[in-house]
Image 1: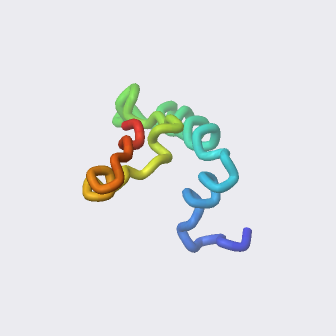
Image 2 (image 1 turned 90 degrees about the vertical axis):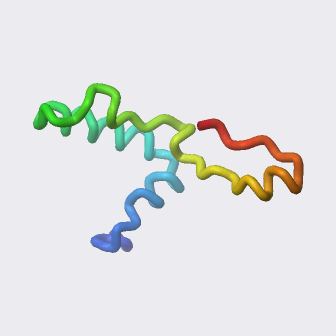
Length: 68
């Protein structure tokens, strides 16, 4: 409630660990309402919560990239 209407919901869901659960439940509701959403077009997986590591940092520090 503290961040109501500030468009920070995604970050709150990620921080609380509920992003996959809440967004997939939302996608089921949206697919029922619309035929415009592709079957697999709205699935959130744990890999989609990760941001890519910049390639320059991967090269400098011999890191492995986050899964896609």
